[in-house]
Length: 300
Image (cartoon, rainbow, N blue to C red; front, side):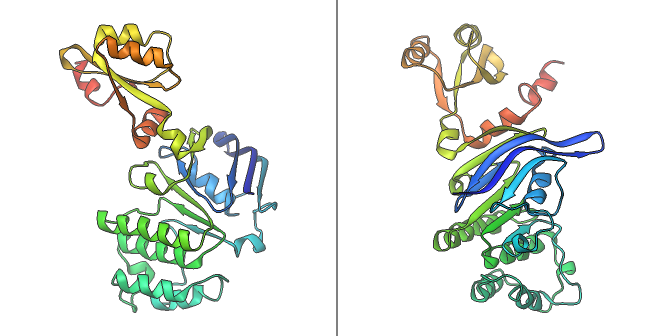
């Protein structure tokens, strides 16, 4: 069952198109990664799904309804980001109690256990928390709400490595116990690739692809070896990334639509074939530059 259905969705701010003719489907009870560089349109898309923004054109349905200013959907959707607003007069402990009056699936026991685990001072105010602590508190609210649609927009901002690791593990464990539709937005995949089921990759407000994480891992392969041999072998192939190294070596990433004969040919020519990490692939696909930063200096 599709809980989010998007067809030719666009959002413009004046003459700037933040989203351009996006079409996709998100299934119920899956963890989907929304991936793209900063400025790709991820936050705009998520705020439209959450009902915070009105689309410019196209169609978007969440549980078969238009989400904009939809009170019914707002009670079943939570949007977690760095700018979550809470009543400033309440302590963070009181905020947890207040959340329980709004979200029908609220698990106060989980919220308090996470609250204690991350060593919060119950008398602190949300506005006085450090950036990392604020993100951690927001994460607790997002998990404990157990909304049918749970959206995390760059949720680990300011968290240190250990807390980020704990967040992803907590999210996965609670999702397995209480499945729901979760969207995780990020510009990188490296820390969350193991918990995702699907990836929606967008670039400059447009969909680049949507596929399972298993298919993403098989989407491309890396080829490295002597520059002349590599250049001859890649003729006619779809090149996703290319970088030259010293001593005449070259590394390229090509789309993995190759036959066994082509792969055997590469090996016979002395070329090395290697898998491409999903996070590296997304960087290559969404980048507007060729090669790496070293090329800026190597070109003199």
